[in-house]
Image 1 (cartoon, helix red, strand yellow):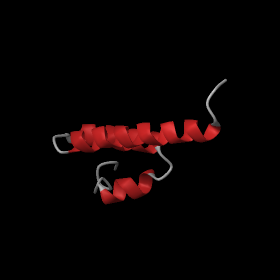
Image 2 (cartoon, one colour; image 1 turned 90 degrees about the vertical axis):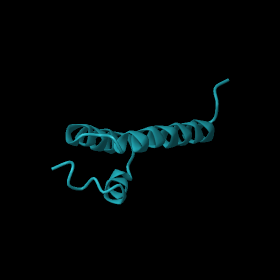
Image 3 (cartoon, one colour; image 1 turned 180 degrees about the vertical axis):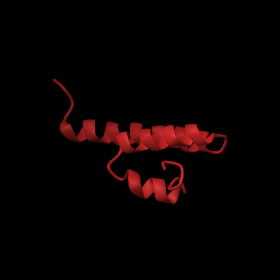
Image 4 (cartoon, helix red, strand yellow; image 1 turned 45 degrees about the vertical axis):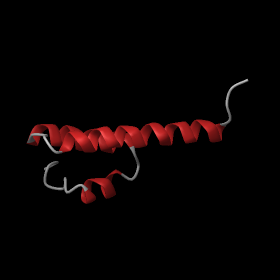
Length: 63
């Protein structure tokens, strides 16, 4: 028997949190093109991406 929908949701959230931590860590050394790639990945990963982009000060990186 598979796991419940709630367990799948929790697993997705935990994995997303880990991925966000990795992206945040790479941000310090990132070049402009790498920052654009991080912005692209954020938009694909999470529905709250615009809030993260603003708080991580990547507003100018995606232009």
